[in-house]
Length: 84
Length: 159
Image (cartoon, rainbow over all chains, first blue to last red):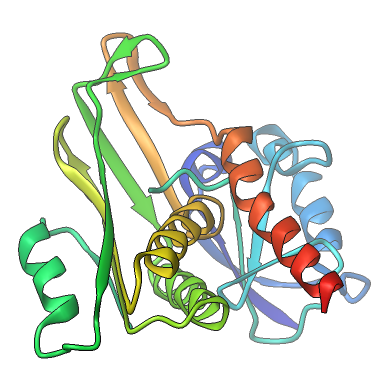
């Protein structure tokens, strides 16, 4: 299945990419698994590694690592928010 | 109940006035205005850029306002958050809450700001003499938001 992935702020700069559409390997079913898959790309992508302070949204709502992905989803990864 | 995410500045007086215009049942309007400061973490700040997540930002603010509406009897809420390039002294955010009495207006205004700080997808980047840097989230923002859920749990337990 294909998902759209967005990156924001310092995380966008670390991975050098604002958005991409990705065909997911079959074994990736959750947001946490997707995050681990992306961090394995190495270099700047290690900003997504476990232990780093990363937040995520699924279809524009904040979720945790257990959130289940479906085809056509919009996923976003970003640092903790600092508005207001 | 109305939310705006915009680059443009806003008129605080006009926004406050609009919350009670033609509504004689409104007895209290509480408001908060957040501004860009010229100092942060000991460094001078010459400018700030606010990035956001278009689409999710509006949704997150609407969710926060809706939650405030479930917790208190409110007669009107207005939230405006700016993005883009801002200078010290510039307004960043406005929250205005209209109610019958001051208690719910003050409380809901503070609740909305505390939740906005941890739930709305905005990120600040500051320009300082040593270069640009992303602002780190503060633990105090998380604890400010968390106290509302603890309070809520206590209320639920008493029922």
